[in-house]
Image (cartoon, rainbow, N blue to C red; front, side, top):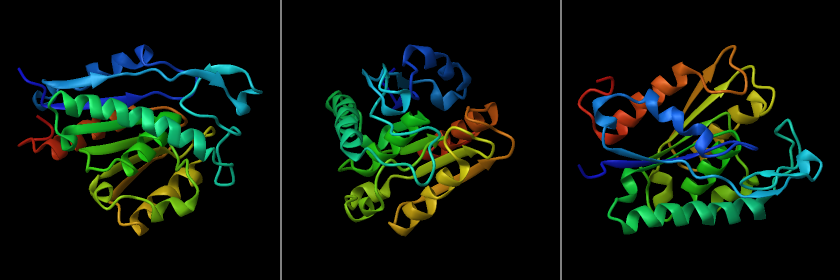
Length: 218
């Protein structure tokens, strides 16, 4: 069977793609049957928040925990965005329409998923952010391509997150809405810096709605 859609899952700081492959076993709905999953790994580089030690990281992070006052390492973010765009373009070249490609990510991977979706020149199927943040300075909203604003965003954040402050995550969606980007925000009481089964269940339903499944819960 031909690939019906592609999910590119971007892991968090210090993690790896292969360590996240098990996530896809949660998505058992019929409409997910022919979805292709990609779990790339970040390059190993020095991270300021880790005292300059080398670790898997999509871009440099200035401090942990992440708060609304944390410095943004925008140049590194945009370099990582180019890498993700190359992944998307490879799938497009293989015959997958951009509007059938999802970007999903946790923590730093969520931040990168968001930035990559907002600066891709065509609308994507969607971007799902878990425990992430806006890794760009506020002025970025003036630079979002018009077509990119059509990409829907699903943003999920644990209210007890002590790595990426909940208020930091909560501040993102209003900024996106102001820029004309549709963003569905879901807060999860008691959830720390992790992904819950409830979040994954909601993600599967969201996939279904985006893919036009007759029953997103099927």
